[in-house]
Length: 408
Image (cartoon, rainbow, N blue to C red; front, side):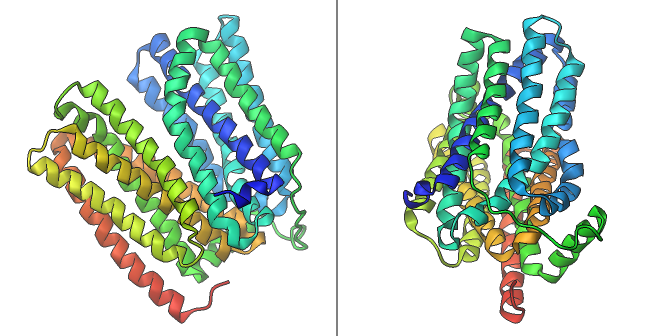
């Protein structure tokens, strides 16, 4: 996993994302505790999660169309600067002791809208600054960021809140966005333009993007896989506190161990993918790892049916789930990047991002309801079996389409 980091533009992008993602984790845990102390209301907490996700989901298709119209370097800089400044405003309000819940909600909406532009733009930029043969390694490094921030962010964030206070942690996150923006400023990103933007409306661009996906069904299947993984991964996240409580030992500690092993699996999975030098057939690897995720969920359910209560077996499975999710994420990014024309990348990644962002909260709601009328063992057994079956069907469809129609 070394060659791609010698690319100065990718290195700047990678460092900026790593710093801002860790800052996000700091902010998330600080904000959760602040809301808890301020309102002691799970309803407010849930609404804040909606405000943090829904605006970006609604804007994603239109944002993707705009991303394809504009020079992409200013997009990531402006998105980071705006998000950094609004978080610093939250910090100032906290320092002045006048921070209110509605302030936090307003900032959550702004951050969500900023992410709707930033996330697809970053995915579209990577193929512009990294040679095609290096894309798997580049995506491995980006996934490594997610794993590291998942493992380190909550722990360090909790320590920072305890010793430094809410306002300081808010400042740290705001500055992390500004550092990311500074990294973007020094990147050399090719300027791409389109001659038809004057005559076409943004909504016509959205329709053109949807038409492209309908014609390129193998790409549409990959986006469907993204939705499936997020959906069934959501079933695990909802079930995890209940699973941890039913295992031997302290339930809260078990939950912490499970979450840590998931994050560690994400790190190990990204390292494995980067070191394995997998440059060919990412689609084959994608379906294998998604099936592996389904198999892990199924295995947890079966262990529960066998009344296995030792945390060790489940912790090992959590690590493998993290490995499977990391590799699947790297592979689907690589497939979309190598099969999508540059002038369509913003729209494709906007829709892909929307699919993931919609599937996870839907899973939280649906599986939360199902847990009230069912059990963890039944829910995870069913989730794993359905994911394996769906993956097999989609893989067969994917290979049939790929062998009978040319890719772009």
